Image 1 (cartoon, one colour):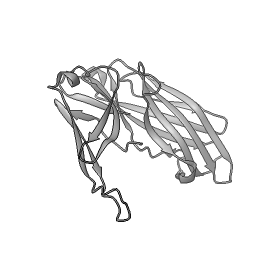
Image 2: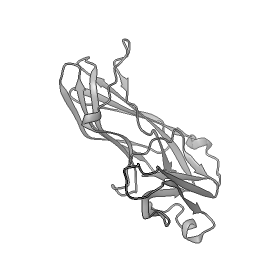
Image 3: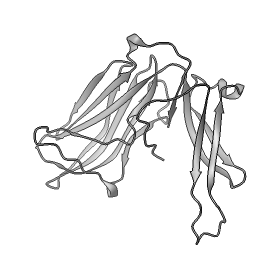
Image 4: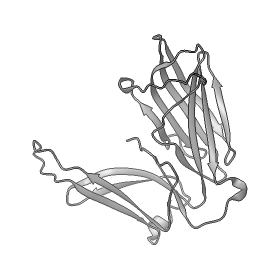
Length: 224
């Protein structure tokens, strides 16, 4: 599943709870499942969970004994000291055409984490392409991400990978394949890949700035 949001970092003092709301089954279903709210708590006072802080990502299966044995699997990492990286992606077609649709995927990965631990910022199948047009005075157009904030441990870099398929207003198809952009931890910057027919610009801003970081006891959470 592609997570939507958060639009700011997820923080929790001590503990956090994941809630899953299961909708009731339709009248035509024979499962007898009435649905309901399922929740799982990460408790910092439990030694098992406390030992996960500042470690590699952990996968946990959420169960509901009264409904079904397994409901969902969540992969997360808990960080005691992290920055919020806000990501913005813009595109520009060099021939001046507007876009008729955009599909593909944009992911974020933190240096030191395995490649499989990527956060999906944008994913759109070919059949559900989104359309964005530039303004009259700006040839760039902003891509609407499903989530645009990623928690990044202090001292680690953020890597953004762009894989997009773009349809222009005149029917031309353009692809951006495996475009990697790396951002140093805490340094606000933008990087542009100058392809043959389309330019992609990824801008990352950080909060708080590295030179004003104050030590806190809040945990920062990152879900994959």
